[in-house]
Image (cartoon, rainbow, N blue to C red; front, side, top):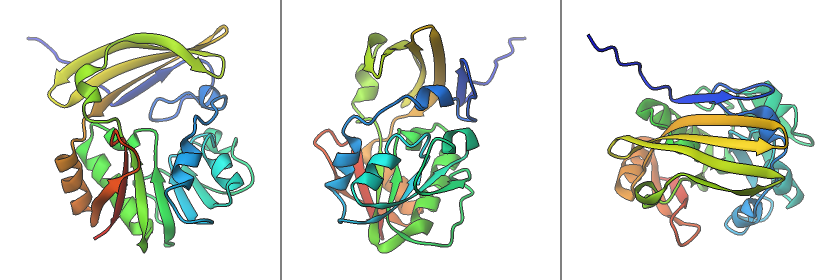
Length: 231
């Protein structure tokens, strides 16, 4: 008999605390924005209230605050949230969040929406809908669908003193990637392995529809940043 070990959705290794989705807190704490806050700022009203889901160590949070927005930062890792200063933080998983408040913008970045767990993705989207104002918007970050066809292992300078290496790319099923990334800073090294689900436009629109949202456009030409609004 051949025993097949189920693939884990997420797995991480390295020094310091590792979050349930495999992210290394010490690694995230050194990351700086690469233009994302300004990109978001240009697409939303001045002074908008923002619910940032999966805020991590505040890489985007602090810049959005500096740009004049009110931000509530949510993460399931207290170690991540300890790095966020100057605003309200909420320690919670995305799928169980229930603030009973509405925001002008709900932000879900870092490709969180591409989880290979369909039920979890739908729970994420329901949380987005429950917390966005009826005249507000949800901003999602995904990989452009075509990226799934072409991505291959690489090594590059990731900025912030890091070397980033995509060590392994496996395509176990259509629309699914099994990825392992390595991050090196000096003598420190972390790995992050995860399953990622390709989100074509039609598929994503159907997923949004089940949550009471609809796609209303893109923030950029490659369709990696998606705007959705309540139906």
